[in-house]
Image (cartoon, rainbow, N blue to C red):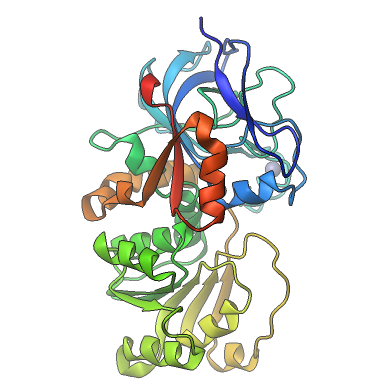
Length: 371
Ligand SMILES: [Zn+2]
Ligand SMILES: [Zn+2]
């Protein structure tokens, strides 16, 4: 059997290196998969730079698709109960909640579990089974993993196109806030989370989706593949009052949006987003995943509007399943692979550099010869 190659981060702030690992054999309840596509996420840039405490060395990659290579004893079905066989195209939730804490239990909020295991983030590669991240030819999926077969009719590119943004927004729009039929939805931000929010809001029945983002070429991509009905470029419309006026013009009687989804990661966007929501509306903060500090807001607007201000953190394994099952509906409406830029696994450093420079929306590492 061939020894799998993987990309390893040995030291923060340095280039990742290709190395090989011993061939793993799945224990009972585990699954070994050949990774076909692994996404590169903004979080990976932060991890590589050492902005979060993670174990080293590590194989990064918390979003991936692959084919079942070997099933451990007792694994017969995926998370939906469908038969699972060697060769099946699958995706898996990046996280395994502990199942025992208050978040996992009484709160029913496993995305808030403090001790969940996360592939590519808190599972180092020093110990067997080593390959616990997606930037690898193989990944060892531990017992307790949530694995779902990719629905017929869609391919790995479609599943990976939104990366972790897909299940993240699925959580936000199912478990935290809901789009109602006919809503006007504003999405602040046009990165993967913003794109996912605009797509999933449309599929959920929004009457109009206004994307406020940038840069211009990213909005052009959104327009070309049908994401969002109205696009406001913050690089061209630099005055927040101008942006607000344009948003309000898209809403009934200029009263504001029913739902505003923050997907920027920029603290100052929050005050602007609150202004865009109507009285009785909802403001949903999804994009502030990294702590970029404080920002002034006028809380009077929250009271006067009786605004529901909600936060949404990460996603549960079930959200991942629900997202993958929604990909056929998304793929029928949007050209998802148009979001991707492919790199061979050994060019992971180039993928990170291009993402950092803003040259790509969604880099993906592809094990082309092994699909
Ligand atoms: Zn991510
Ligand atoms: Zn827990």
